[in-house]
Length: 44
Figure 1 (cartoon, rainbow, N blue to C red):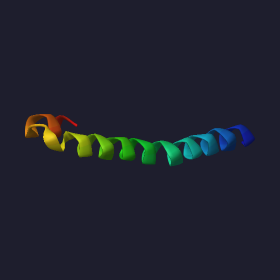
Figure 2: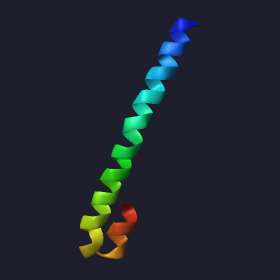
Figure 3: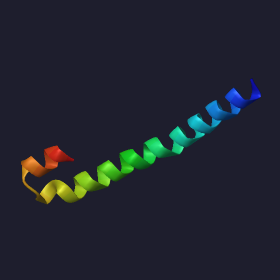
């Protein structure tokens, strides 16, 4: 049971920092993509 708890807590802690980093990266890409045609903005 301790092993499952360790794996689960590791998964949650990784998700807590990865989700904001992915969202911030997408936001920065969209800021730079404002100058591009809508076709490329949609791809992001």
